[in-house]
Image (cartoon, rainbow, N blue to C red; front, side):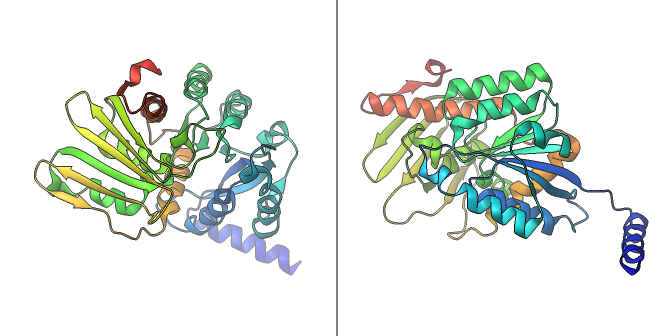
Length: 322
């Protein structure tokens, strides 16, 4: 009885404080460290008045047996979600959907995303699809088409797009209009994905944060240890991505403005926090913070870079892969 009274008092005080019930989120995949990290951050950030409360209530483990980064981790992450965050683990997406208000697709392998998104879009519930949006440009384009057809809001992004250090550079008014941008990140490869999709996206996606849409062609230089992709925008600006598989493998950006130049700090902190805040706000407003057309251009940039590699660094127009 004491427990029941305490619970009632707690609920009453929460209501008095104007606290809305948390948005119930379901996760699909669970084979990435993001699943556990995001569930933890939702819980921590829910106490902030400027962040809608989100609680991960259900998870559906799914993995790709031919990808060790997927199949080898799903059981451990699912167990951690159940034990540490009270997440109910279910066997199918159909079981998950009635339990939640919004969905996160957290399958590390982009090949799974189209089928998973197709299953969720029919529900009309807002969806976040973790990077990469898909494992091919064709699949990415189909995801966007299905979302429009069903009227379901979604977005996909690298966490680096929303990290505080990058946002501080972008919001620096002393730069003036952005004239160019150089971004670097690690660039591990995975044989079932185009080269930059797997990890290089952590540099390419932020490149579009600063440059915006309008890239028309890409050149790529590739070695065993490094990548350099150069994009030309329709207004004559140039943006570059540098990826590393050897030596220093951090994250960073240099932005060239018409009035000044700015660099991000060498060490980035709390990389996931900005993305998780944006997901929570999106689940409440149903307004995506990233235009799907921009995400498609990110995918086209990376696909064009693959074609450029096949052609010994020759320029490839994005229109060719769209």
